[in-house]
Amino acid sequence: MSRKSRSRNDSDANTPSKKNSGFGDGSGTGFGAEPGGTPAPPAPHTLSLPALWVEGARLRTLPLSMAPVIAGTGVAANVTAARLDIAALCLALALLLQIGVNYANDYSDGVRGTDDVRVGPPRLTASGRVDARMVLRVALVFFGLAALTGLALVVMTSQWWLLLVGAAALAAAWYYTGGTRPYGYRGLGELVVFVFFGLVSVLGTMYLQAGRVTLLAVIVAVAQGAFASAVLMINNVRDIEQDALVGKRTLAVMLGRRWATVAFVVLVVVPYAILVGLVPMLGMAALLAFGSVPLAAFAVVFACRPSGPSDYINALKLTSIGSLAYAIMLGFAASVVPYL
Image (cartoon, rainbow, N blue to C red; front, side, top):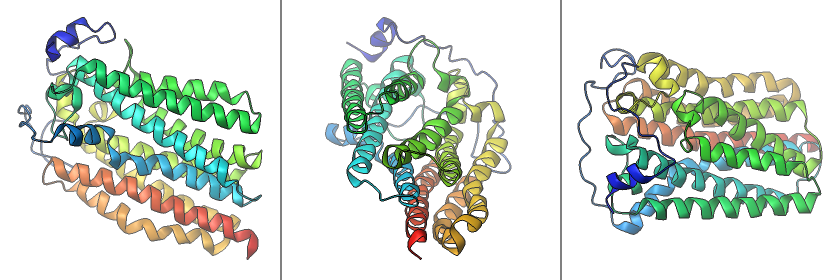
């Protein structure tokens, strides 16, 4: 069955009109600009099928899932001994959920036709080389494994109310681009990412290990949420013309390339401004996380002066890795302060 016929038959996809919606500046000039105009059809990709599946997992986004768990473990160790068994399960849960989201996004955008015109890496469904139903099944397998991991955490800690949080996380993962009214198509992606990759992940990791949440954990969660929102923002800045063309109203499309790039820069700066405010809590050890600044700085340079779509991908990768480096350094600082 062809991909177009799958799109027509899939009840979960309401294919939007591909008429240009007029969102975004589209001028191709000025701060954060990329040569504009109507995007050309993507060149065919020559990845092998196994490599295409690996690409579909979007490994470059995984550091973003690891970072809040590491940060949450660090702030838990600030008040009690960290539980590495719980931390390991939280990390597995985050990675499984992230990979599931990535495959679900590939499926949903593919059957809607959103990925028919894109400048980024190839997609499984949109390439036509993999049946959309297979991509959906793989996504559901990862969601199922994530659910089982979450259930194990609940059983180990007897915090049964967290089942509701897990259900909300799974719903957020699917409805980002799935369902009849995906929130990722209405400019809400960055907000939801901030909540789940920042607040829920950091605070949940700490609570499961320490049995409580501290002000330090909340502040660190805000920093990690800002990184996560920055990654999604720059990803959507890269696709701004393509998304506008198919009616996908991301926040970047609504803001336009210039102001969306400004928003990305602000989101990257926020975690480092927070470090200064953490000095009264952690002493000078809080400044250790400034060691990740070079990664963030290069990400900003790529985002503000792109020579092509690949520079946006570089900015995304550097921001994702930078968030992980930041979490490791700040988590270490938080965990050693009680022993100084």
